[in-house]
Amino acid sequence: EFPFATLSRKPSLGSIKCERWISDASGQRHPQRWLVQGGSESGLPTEFDERVYVALMAVTRKQGIVSRKVTFSVYALLKLMGEATDSKHYRSVERSLERLLRASITAEGAFWDADKKELVHLANGFHLIERYWLAYKEGTDEVIEREGAPGYIVWGDELWRSFQAGYLKELDLALFFALETPIARRLYRFL
Image (tube, rainbow, N blue to C red; front, side, top):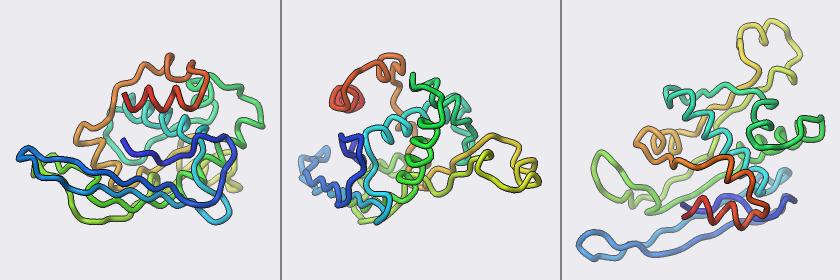
């Protein structure tokens, strides 16, 4: 697990940088580097965005990890997260989706290739989600009818391959969302 969000509820500019070493089975040490940069207007993902991300992963698992395109409703996400379903919280989810889309991550030695059974040493850049769409923000009834869902995200390719390889943790969601502080939630996810 590498951090992609700040522990603050307020978005901030800047970056999240993580550098560490990992040892392989033979004891050889390899560097791991992780850099997250937010959009210039939206900022870095926040602790609320991390909760939205966890809720989206839960929806993905519930749908069977069969498609990068995962349908959802903002209402259902907020209910899963134990949040109010008022317009303020809808806007919070909208801003979260924007930050999750705009966050760019550069990673080196941070992924395990399950097929090759080895650490991926190359540096690569990716996004957590590649696209999102919300029906209630759409202006065209034709498009809403064609999409046939209240909303969806399309997971980024790197994350999707990780999900398919089985690297999706089982969390007690009720416990996770009941934890009162961002640090407690982050530690629960990591541990």
